[in-house]
Amino acid sequence: MTMTSKEIALLAIEAASDKKAEDIVTLDVSQLLVVTEYFVIATGRTNIQVRAIADWVEEVLRDKGGEKPIGREGTGEDKWVLLDYGDVVVHVFQPAERDFYRLEKLWSDAPRLEASGKMAPPISDTGERHADDTSQL
Image 1 (cartoon, rainbow, N blue to C red):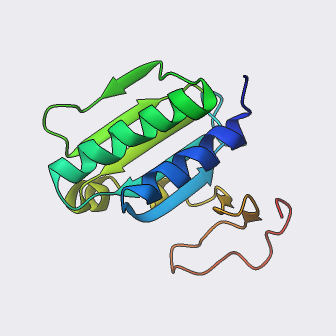
Image 2: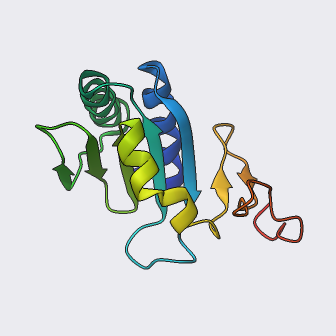
C-alpha cells in the first residue's frame, strides 16, 4: 500500500499522540523546501518517552502504512530523534532541545496540517495566525 505524504503525516500525528506526545505540530513545508513536504514535530518529557514516541511512530507507519524510514538519527541520547520518511520528517524532541532549535519559528511561514487533516494558516512570530493567508485553507 502506498500512502501519500499527507497520510503518512497524519498517521505519525496519531501514533505520537498514542504515546502522549505533547504539543504536536505539523508544518507543510512543501512550498518552502524541495527535500520534504511535512515536518511532524512533537515533544516527549524524558529520553525514555522520546524513544517510545519515535519507536511507536516507526512501528505504526510500518505496520499500518507499509512505510519504513530512510533514516533515523538521535537514538542513544534520545534528546531529539529524527525519523526521515523522505516526504515526511518526524522530529521528537525533549523540551529544552525543541526550545533551542525552534523549528516552528524557523519555518513560521509554513501552513499547519491539523490532526483533522485540514490545513491552517501559518502562525506569526507573535503566536497569531496570519489573517491574510488563507490560500492553503
